[in-house]
Length: 120
Image (cartoon, rainbow, N blue to C red; front, side):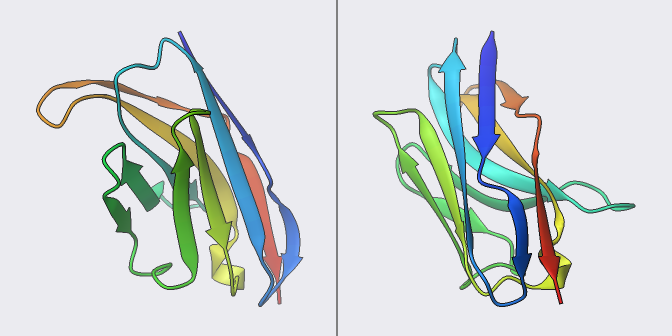
């Protein structure tokens, strides 16, 4: 069983910053990647950023240059530093963990989400 616990969401004004954290526990190994997705009201869940255990990162075009993903593999934790936030970044942010290797997928797991609200 895998548990992903997110923290760090909240209300911030446009132009401000927030840092999200997600700690993974349970039967999580091997970890292929950890990352963040978001879902705004009435929209589909979308990728924000992911980082593989080997350090490769992938960002949505809409956040590239403003958001930075990082991981602490010793703590099974993934972070998302969000700068220059915009009202369109308002969404529930979900932590994701992909179990497996580069060639074998073993499944993925989701956190419960943390709300990020950016006011104009």
